Image 1 (cartoon, rainbow, N blue to C red):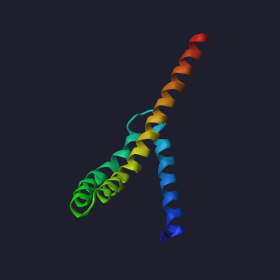
Image 2 (image 1 turned 180 degrees about the horizontal axis):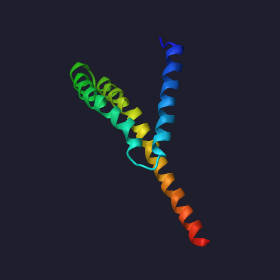
Image 3 (image 1 turned 120 degrees about the horizontal axis):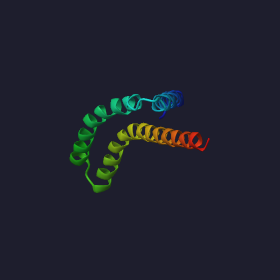
Image 4 (image 1 turned 90 degrees about the vertical axis):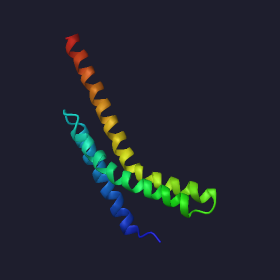
Amino acid sequence: MINPIKLVFCLALFAAVCALEVFLSKRRAWWPGLVLPLCLLPPVLFVLPNVVLNALGVAENSLQKVLSLLMGLLFFAPALVLLAIYWHCRRSGKHREQVEKIKIQDL
């Protein structure tokens, strides 16, 4: 059974990490926003092959294999969320800079 206190704590921790990612992604330099997603990728790259190989070896039917592979791919979700936050913040920052340049040129 899922402990609600642990669930709330994990969600709050992930929300704090997402807020930190937004802060780092909005910096002028491009690299601080990539630190957190790149920190999450190596553990995923070590865990994912193990999960895939165990899923292919242990599961009896194809449905169990597919579900095990999907559970293994869920390890990528936090890294993908942080990369999506980085991409969105950098893109909106570039758009904002272009609007500022146009406003300056109009004056």
